[in-house]
Length: 112
Length: 115
Image 1 (cartoon, rainbow over the protein chains, first blue to last red):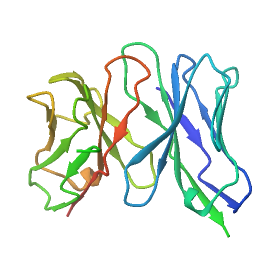
Image 2 (image 1 turned 90 degrees about the vertical axis):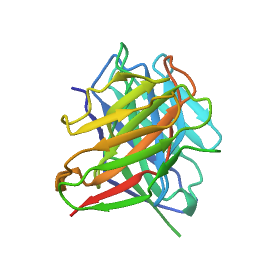
Image 3 (image 1 turned 60 degrees about the horizontal axis):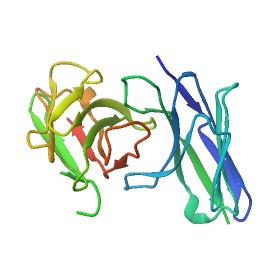
Image 4 (image 1 turned 180 degrees about the vertical axis):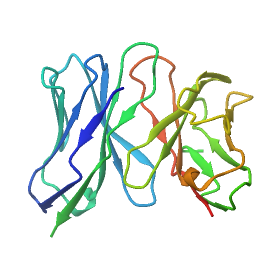
């Protein structure tokens, strides 16, 4: 089955850029997503990218997709302490299956 | 309501008891999903509905788990004869569309602890 992998931890200084990486295995994935999870809260959809795109930018967020390498990244510019959370990458395969397959999440810690 | 609402927020039960977890999706949303999230892991798909029809239940781990959405709105996930391995965060999500590329909006989850 599909497998989505992420590194477990990332620490950055406030004001620096953060880059969270993800690799996936299903080349048929149509959409790829980034979700943010804060303690005690639900999963918040940050952004998503269609598989025919290479890049998507939304304010401080930049998503890069390398389909050849099945690599997805999320760059957060000017990282703030409020960005500290767990970030999940998820893929949605093509075909009849409509469920998302999530990675294990990357804990981002922003240091003052 | 403004978002996906799940209740209860926490559920502690004894092994062997049945539990029912409730999800109230965003009004008008067509699709409703149930996921289970173990500590330190990402959510894993359980089942989903379009309106009242259960479209896919391939993620339900065994026949102790069932879900319904009888009127195409509120959904209930039922776990019978709970076991300790059922302890996890159960998350519900809803989506406004039944087509591809839909955005899933998640609730805060129900934390289930089976003693």
